[in-house]
Length: 152
Image (cartoon, rainbow, N blue to C red; front, side, top):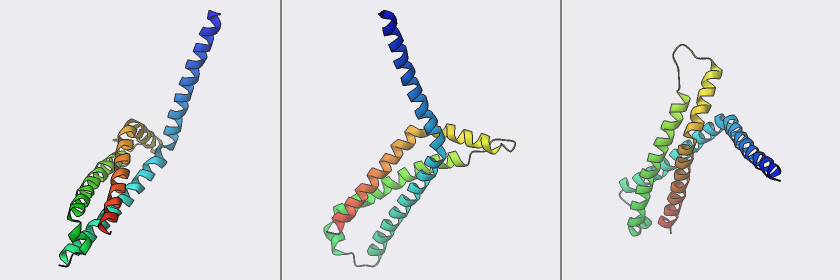
């Protein structure tokens, strides 16, 4: 009886280990695609923030601020703070991507070794990238909410 329980326990541990190994292999395989998707998301967020900031600057330098900006000064300040925070997150994500893509080793490395190092660095930085990506999405959503409030 104990032998059967030990065998089942060993099988369960082996199943969990192989499941974890499978997930790791999948992350390894998807690393290049994930890096480029993150780069695209950074680009979209940067364009959004630049457009919103440009609109705010244009409306304030034109001398006539829209009534929504007069009545929503607190919302406009909140939006400005969100944009600054969002650009900080974008900057940290861009630094992470630059670190992954600009990686060079001395003596003209082979392309496959560079790709392997990028994948390894991506896996090592994946928790940080996920956290920053989540922060970026939350910030972008909050910017959208503030824009809606300003236009009411």
